[in-house]
Image: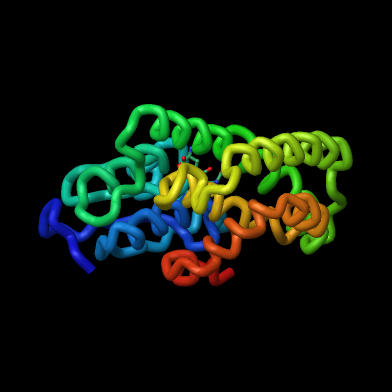
Length: 218
Ligand SMILES: N[C@@H](CCC(=O)N[C@@H](CS)C(=O)NCC(=O)O)C(=O)O
């Protein structure tokens, strides 16, 4: 792996089950940046450790350090990784494609994560595993927004290889990490694979070495 921005090895703080930690890891691997994933369990029984709150005052993961440069928020972390290191660009150079990529990342943050990961995956898969009943109202709202999200994403993808054209971008990395959990829900699988181009995109995502190497272990 190469690293040319400085000789300091970036540190990513978090856990491999986290959607957002995985997005940052995908960016690091796609750029070929040698780094360490430093474990932090924000759901530990004794609470979020103070050393993590010092890195991320909102107590979320991931947090990131490159030498004495510290960051949190996945959007800032992944854009820094893309811009500070050599390796294939993860953001388009032209304004329109870059704006489209940023739009898709916002759709992922604003609708796919809260509705398809929390509203459907957590409600329909995680809660029953903990012997808790899903919140029917929450699921119904999430289902409606999932349907809109998949329609929009299928339209934006059209017959392109990746969400923003021929090159993999942050838009694909965000969606890959989120869709991976959402597809555990049978009704999401059905809605997703009804859209043939999304199914083809998913096969390409699954074939990425970075995707295989960042599979959650728990
Ligand atoms: N806006 C943050 C979101 C990060 C986030 O929500 N991380 C989740 C794990 S995937 C988390 O820390 N959840 C713990 C909580 O909400 O208490 C980012 O982009 O990094």
